[in-house]
Image (cartoon, rainbow, N blue to C red; front, side, top):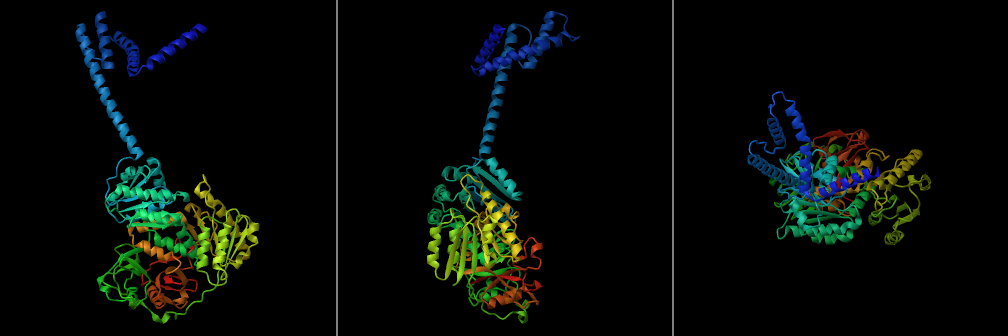
Length: 630
């Protein structure tokens, strides 16, 4: 038994050794294996054939012919030289065909591998280039696809240090059908100029450099901008839109982006919108409509017939567009005084459906002055804001609340003592005292006992902030604690019978539908907000200054004000009447928010840029959306 096992082992070892000698040994074994099977089978077929030759030599010749045809080794009969030559020609043909097939197969395999790696150069013209991969990529690509919806042909090229197939699958799942827009993915680090050239940025209409999910990776954005400059060489290049999270890198990023570049500071913009929404509930819904390409958005237009007329006249010169400002010498003027004259080189900043829907149509005849409310200046009162939770944007929120707060205002912060920068709170309190009081109470905001001690109904608004994602943690996991806090807040509001305006910051837009909040509440998705802004600016770089002013602490901003400040309650009036009433207050009316059916409609009652001829009965609960100064 042991000797048999030894023989088997030796035979296996000898077989493995011959295979290790290379391709020739493998071919030999394959030929031998075929002969062992084919020759006996051919012999059986010949000997069992009733029409086979009668002589043994004839049958052997028939077996040889059948074997040769099966293995493609000639099969000629006759003298030995003739047989050998036929075998030689068959072997030459076999080697040639096998080599050709192998070369073709290898070439196709290498080509398919290269395509899967995403290393071929994009040859598109006028396409949009997206560099990097972060939470904004899905929003940016979706908006660029929507912007190209009325174009005959469009393309978006994404270059990131990820697997090409993985990027395509992720984008297909989140973005969906792209219509006429072609989506192209290329794999490679955008910080490498040689690989960055794969996206053909020199022929693009715009380049967007996404911020990283990790705030400490802002230097990568600067490096990508430098690589873009190197890849473009001496040519001027397309407009560039980039975003960083930390303000320490904004200057460096702006220098690297060049004169045609726009750099957004995402944390600061998010903080400003949170502050504005805390003071004007429902504002995030308005910005959501203004910033996406699905509805009405900002465009530039001009008609020579308006030259020499006042800006106030232009407010009622378009039936289906809302005029909000002028672009003069490349600088936007939002909500200028109504008596400002429109010059021959000025362009109007309008909110309209598309770039070709702004058409002149005098609406002065639609104004009913009899139902307009006489203008009365409003009084600013102190505010009380409660901040639950803490993250890297919280100090910016406190700072912006403090800079614009009136005397007697209060900011209360409740958060884990390990997360809050107590030093920053002390400095802020010292800067804004005595007109502003800033208090801090340590506690877990996900626990009911912590919130029950706060007298929540004494505050004007509540801001709920989730913690920053920990290293290695999924970004949307940070929303889990926010959802718990919102559940507790909902229970407390039901107990007190008072519903407070709540502004919630989240990371994952999918968690918006899970949040236990009333319909139409303000939910700020920071990544989605920055993605929308980047897409808008990439289509028109002049809008960067427009959004800069809208999100600033000073200048003209978006407000929601009671409709009774413009038209008499219970009266029916056209929207042109509302625009005329807002003009008397040196404001630009751009829409309204109704509260009669707000919870039953997808838009939560927000209507941007209604037709000037639209008539409705205005109630005390309705609000008018205006661009105005505080």
